[in-house]
Amino acid sequence: MAIDRMKQASSLINRMKQSKQLVDGKKSAIFNPDIDIQIYKPRRGKHIFDVVPYYAGKFDTQVKPGVETYTYYYKSHRIGVNKTEVICPRLYGNPCPQCEELDSMNYDDNPDYFKDYGAKNRGLYNIIVLNSREEK
Image (cartoon, rainbow, N blue to C red):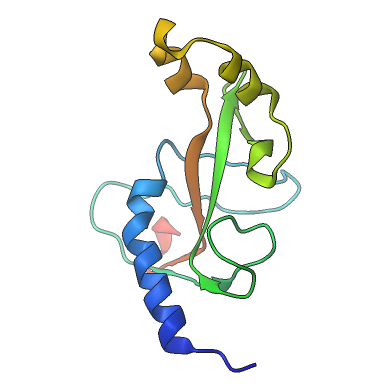
């Protein structure tokens, strides 16, 4: 099966335009703590980096497996006193106790509660930082 690079590039550009609308909130680490993954926290000022595209897998939520993409979108909750980030199980078609609890409540009574505890859109990017060594 031949890959239509122009079609993939056009699709990728459209998703990039939608990216800012899909992602909200703070940075977080949802990774397995046994895996050494660096989280890039840029300092104030200009930065240069490359976003590394990849081929979507079966758990990508915005594109079909095998399509080239550059970000992994997901929904997460911040749970408990420490605001621990957990991926919303509804993302993969499973029941989510947090969402079910919020669904059973009346939104009009306290919209701020829903804003704080509802699932938020997040995005992960694989980047190569091209700034000075101290930034890496």
